[in-house]
Amino acid sequence: MSSTMGHFLGSDDASEIEPFDPDSLGCAGHTTTGTPSTVGQRGRKGHQPPSPVIVSAGTSNGQNGGSRSGRKPSPGGTPPKLKTRDSDCCSINFIKYSLHIFNTIFLISGLVIIGVTLWTVLWKHQYISLLSTTNYAIGTYALLAAGVLAVAGGILGCCGVWHEQRAVLLIYTFVLLFVFLLEAIVGGLAYLYETQIETELQHSLNATFMANYGVSERQTMAIDSMQREFSCCGAVRFEDWRHSVWLRSRRKDLIRPTEGRLVPDSCCITVTPRCGLRDGPSNIHYTGCIYEMTDDLKFHLILLGAIGLGLSVIQVFGMILSCSLYVKLKNVLD
Image (cartoon, rainbow, N blue to C red; front, side, top):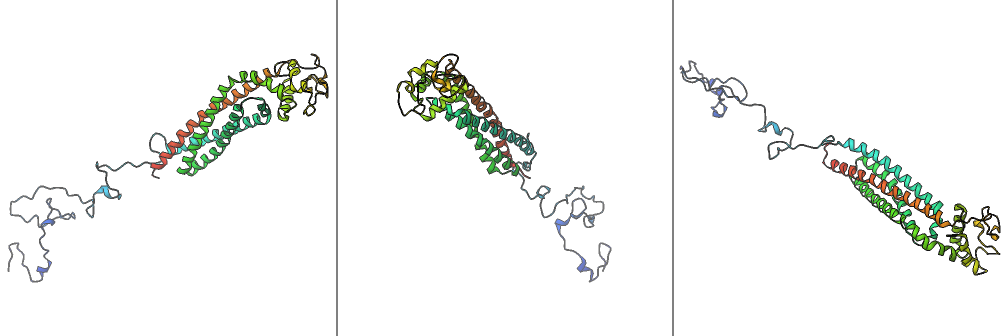
């Protein structure tokens, strides 16, 4: 039997005919697999095939090209921009190097503070007992604590930056803040107290000399040490000793017995046993100790104030850098 297609079909050829699927027809005369279509060309004689349309075959499983990475597209249609170690104006590596430099300076500043305050405590602290207030002692010990914290904080900061531990960086930031407050407060109080130290000494130092020499062991040693170091005698003048408890009381339990002395032996130009029996200008100093002590304490207060206020500025840069690194490590994608 003949076919309108000009081909005789046998009984075995029927099994080779694929069932008609309208979806398999490509409008461009091609199938979705890219092979030429023979069925689409079997139109009537003189009938032109439809205009070609390009069909994309670049994806599979119904997924578009933007889904290959496994991330869902953003609502706006563009994928979210992820943070990297070099994102934004300052990279993480740049901040880490800056923090390492800062920690080196921070450690050195802490050692400087410890050195200055220990020198003040060991060599000048004996004179603090002659002051009527404890402001000088409190400021000195507070600055010493700031120096110790600065050294500990510098070591902690190096570990946190090196290992990129955000919890350690947070603790390090609070240490910087506490050191900053200590140094700023001590520096401000030192400058404030420097303007009042002369008035305080004028009202209290002479009374301390007159009432406590020979009676209090600690203050007696401080007065003798001061008169030898500053080459002075008495609080304001050498005649002050004539009105002292040490000279007028004639007590037998004095730490430094009078034994006929007019001034303590520490007043002498050349200190020898019982040299205070004479108070002539060739034998003793006539200048009072209040002048030298005022200048010495003012110098130390200015030094402590400059160290406290000057080094507190450094902590501001450290806090900014540590906070920046803390935030960047939170958003970074390695």
